[in-house]
Image (cartoon, rainbow, N blue to C red; front, side, top):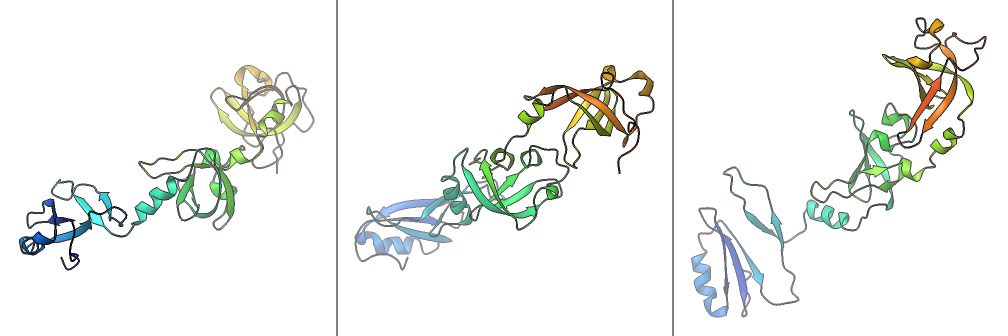
Length: 258
């Protein structure tokens, strides 16, 4: 109450012993009575009623332990207020630069973009297959990414690293009809996957059981090198269809890669 001015209108907000928040507008003729009335208040604040003067920020919080949602006043912006102000400057499709701060065990990459922590999920790290974010980025690395969304409620900003990179899939589509040799990476009930590029993150295609040479169906295992033909590339679903039965065999077929 020591902040009461010599004269003029003010609003007094106070919390009484029962934790109820109330406000009243008074002028200099009521200051003395107001000070006595609020002597037992647990907390109080005085707000000027004149335009042009700085007003404290109003913050809504989660319910207290008794289930009551209370309003509180503060005179300095909190961390959440600064985050909110920063989020209001972002837009979808915006390209931002940040520094990788953490690579979580569950596969999410956290990036500091001007004091706010944004996230990159594994599918948005690269157009190519990624087993773990550490295969693409490292802590302390500066990255450029696109803002996919701004969630003002959860204060969450997902980013994409791959959208600022050239999409290699159209080039893969141009390889339809090619015959290649690749390593079997995974066997599934309806066929098996073959890596069609000689690199760890190379694209993989699926050989359906119907496209498998029956004479080799029972002996194919992970690590084998097979000759396959690229018969289709689905750019929408990002899938590659391969055929083993229509590809000529080679002397190297069946030998595992190093």
